Image 1 (cartoon, rainbow, N blue to C red):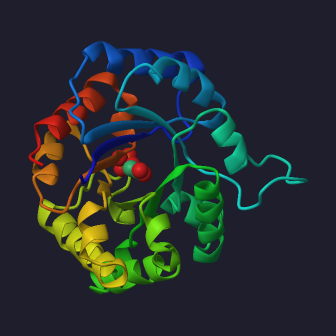
Image 2: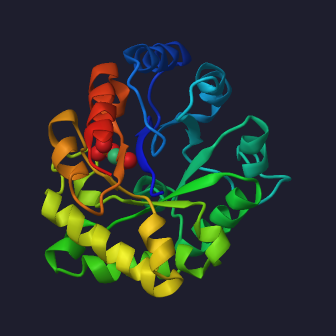
Length: 257
Ligand code: PGA
């Protein structure tokens, strides 16, 4: 069964109190999620335990971190390992977000190391890819995304790839209000799925959850989720407001399987 996911990426926003209020608001909305729909809340590290405590009795609700270390353990001041995330029952981790690639110089090689460690410790990975504006203008976005995948998740084994959710996030759409059109999203999502099919076969590809990210909001979620290969969204700005994120979850619930 291909899962549909609404994932919140809080980035470096909210205090613990604000975050708890937000989660409580989402839970209070009491949206009914069927078996193939999930909500993942990716909080800053210090809030993961509190978020888990609030979500643990709610089926279909999961926690996620926004990053993890590329080394197992040891003298890496300031880092948080995959094992630590596992020890506080974190379910998912975002790896390869464009902000990490851009501001923290994370390369495909490093992201693969993080991905392998995350899976070793039982975490599911939301692996991000997506092109900058210049590449889109040159119409080389598919090539660009393909390289990001070939050097990372496409090197995994068939068993490992089942733990991966891919998020296509065109950089020009992140935090800019310029959402990709449903056609633009669908085109790249179909391309990603066909790439996965070539590498891992049709069964794996048809099961793979591929999220869209980049200015997803209540008023464009329905048309994005209606696209055949768009299986939900990784949501930044709109995930910080109870009403907006709840509306997006509702659109996910209403979207066809
Ligand atoms: P945005 O962020 O929804 O604010 O564009 C998405 C993301 O960066 O994951």
